[in-house]
Length: 322
Image (cartoon, rainbow, N blue to C red; front, side, top):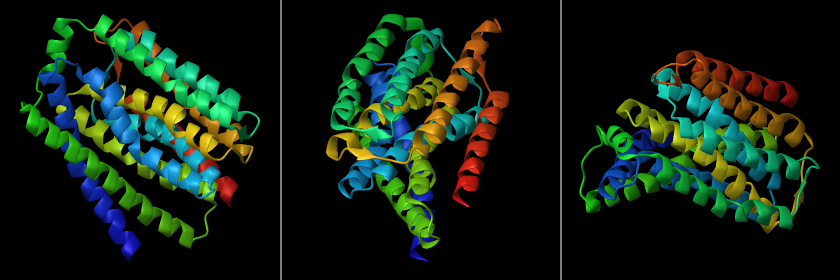
């Protein structure tokens, strides 16, 4: 009963807090001359990745490295196959050229580096530190490219429809929304994890599914609300930025705190699924430009294919669990 109430309360909290969180982030972009894309790649991405970081830290301190690794990889899979898919089903997502030439290459390089570290079913302290320290240059590069590429005309288009707030009001909306997002996600994850453990589900599967989906719900809520409000760059930038944070900040934690060996299936099944979805997203974005559309982007067809891919992955997890 308590677990069911926690799940319901988590959903309600996420829906409301996501709207306040995105509204505050967009207002900051307007008030301080930053673009919503830049906000999405930094503050929003870090904020919505906070649940994953907290879960990974807690699991690592408790000696549950499989849950921490599964949470990071599973969250990236859910971000693309569930969050971005649902967002594309809600509203067509336009893609700027800098996404293809700047953000995606960074994500692909980091994904490949993570695969190199995971291939031997071990994550040691030096590998964890390399991942974590790579976060700073990755973020610095993407911030630099945004400041270089986005001109005044595009910034004006991005700012259109942003809810006007004073700096104090934006701070309260952003900070309050972020805090409630984290609390709601933790409440939802607790309820879902309690239910899953009652049915004696493998801890790795819990990390890959229950925790991954639960901690990705802030991204789902924030991205869906962003799409509905017309802040498309926040929606897409949030996914790319969050996946980078998950690999560099979340996955590095168990290696730094307590180097571990884990199930080889983490690489053979889960990492390859994550890498495959990342490549699939790259193909979708590249195809959007090759189609020579005046406004490159993707919508329901791509969203449906991504959601189908995620469904097939979950089915494979179920097959392996029974």
